[in-house]
Image (tube, rainbow, N blue to C red):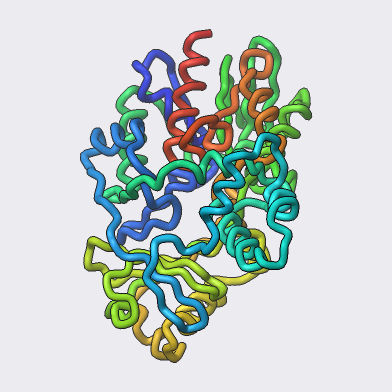
Length: 407
């Protein structure tokens, strides 16, 4: 239950035991020793809690640099606004008063044949960046996100893992306990006590517990690693958790012996294309010969059974199509790589959350603890301007921790 670590930074007034299903801390923050960010990577604007923790961990923020390039069927174009007609779309959204799915919105307001290209571009952007399902994503929630001015983007100089390492040290320094590799299987509860089982014979007791496993587990159901059975059952809360959108994504990080992309895209920060893996970015302002690929949306589910070798080949094929280089040439330039299919990752099963047409009522229900003892928290339950970000997890975790301490 990852976000229990929040207790470790609130005055140390409670004894805390973190029961972590995985063999490492961090969840969807996953920084390798070589600096590859396999999960969260960017800091989107000035985020107070994230910045505070970065400073306390001894790290700092590095502004993301580089130009934006668009490749359309082999034709390169350097541009900031890569969706033609975006201004007209946002003008229409600004007057929208009633909520509906993004698919319904496009059908109702942009069904004319002249908007075919715009509809496809918006769909690709929403599915690929926001990881939404077009049929249930809240248009008003996306409007609120898209209306915000584009904040400057940053990376954590020492990697996001520096924050996790710092929080782990704080928990242990405040006499907290962390148990790794202990997936919870069952929770028995009443108004006075909860028992958290990691198997039939081993359990922990507590008056209050905080559950922060990702919505992807509840979406997947009982076959998911990390699914928890409750006794007595809590069907209303489980149904509410399923009404929090949770998108699909595969991430690719490749190191090369040279920055071969500089010929076609000098000074590139982000590269967009129509290839299977449509989005790539560099490590500017550092001089690493590294490209990171981002493949989001429902179409990624077609690769749930693909092994690492197949995913690497998918990356090579996409880069070959973008830069018109022979696949073997690209293969020979690779010095290291990591592919992470978050859709099949045990104890996660997805990338990050989005707001559906039913998420608001679900969050309202989950704000109330079960019998005053079972609390829910996490990025998916956050309400505010930082939806889908690490900041959302930090802020919601703190809010719920303060609620627990006040009761």
